[in-house]
Length: 278
Image 1 (tube, one colour):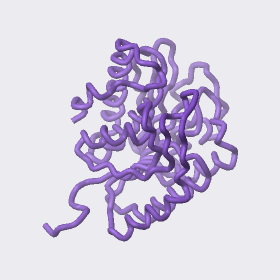
Image 2: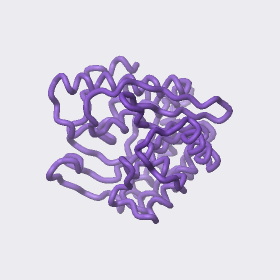
Image 3: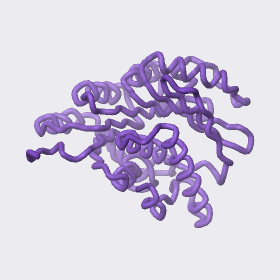
Image 4: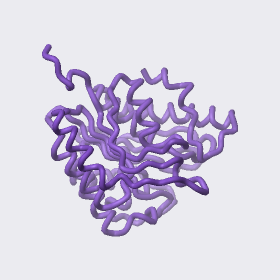
């Protein structure tokens, strides 16, 4: 085998770095690494701690991203996975779109977590223009991991916190599928004492995977979820099995975090259970 940078499987992770608070790249790196893949971060910004805390340091990395990425091109790097998370501006979405165009090969799986909102509302940074651009980026994905709010935004569906039927959820997933992604999981669907994920794959029957709701909502659980999905996709794990594994892992970590009385902003204590993902 010839010596090359590309003999080991790699995932490029495009997201911010938060020094404290267990989210974004800080979560993705240990999870993807323990699952046997090299995690290569592309930072969109640097935070001392995420914005859920009363104060934080922030450094926007947008202007530096093109030069950063250009040096990867010079190294002729290739990736089995490209995974994007929260993006703070239209310019960052454009950079990610270009990154996918330039680095995607036949063996690359693109995972987009279209982080735009929650609880029926778009985040304040997400204007109509930004939502439109995120829809364009979502079309490039092989796997898309929207929560219920984001699925509604992507399909121009009116959000409600009522009980969603399988037919309604499947219709949204099918609408997203028609734009490009082969696999979609709509996460965080409330069903009374349960929380559900809809698993949709082209050519397969849609499935609802439910688990008992435990503890309180915590920062970074979406990043934990999507990091597991991304690593499993590159490792060839069946999609539904991966979604079930990610949900079970997060539930276990939430219970441990409650046990240790960890503040909600600090995310989930996943470190003790990392080795179970191998």
